[in-house]
Length: 199
Image (cartoon, rainbow, N blue to C red):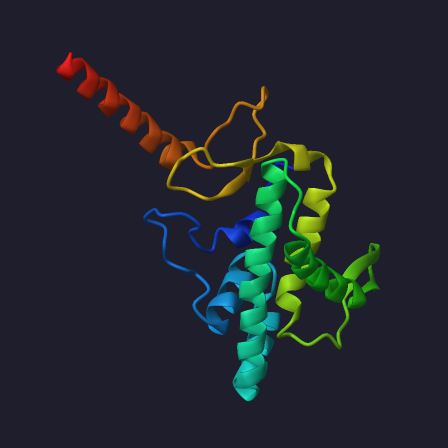
């Protein structure tokens, strides 16, 4: 079982989904998307530089790629949330994820390294669309694997993040114990104090 967090989940966490203090969107523009991709190992620094050059030369294409990324994130979040809640995803959301997954598959090729063959991206793939491909593959791997049944939706009222519950007895309730979990405990403590004071 993987001990890492899933790339697809990390991507949905680039924005807040509920009314809480995490309202800023990390992906404000195509540059923000590229920076996130480099920070998370989706693009190497060389590939990131190539993508920035291509975006500067074709701003309209970069704008379309950015809108596609935002739409993909929304569809991906909806599909992951449905899985976390044991519900069937909406066909429209699934179609958005499948479109990026199909695009990824069309550009995934076998390459040779000194230690053997490995999957890699076609050298002819445009850098403006390839950012979403590893994320889509991550989602497919998660949603069809053993950890799909461990997907959960954070129990905090003002959070909307999804996480994989890897606790031994599957009892984890919050995406982050130090954040949402701690705030929930503080809220419960204050409610008990109010009840005690009023009694």
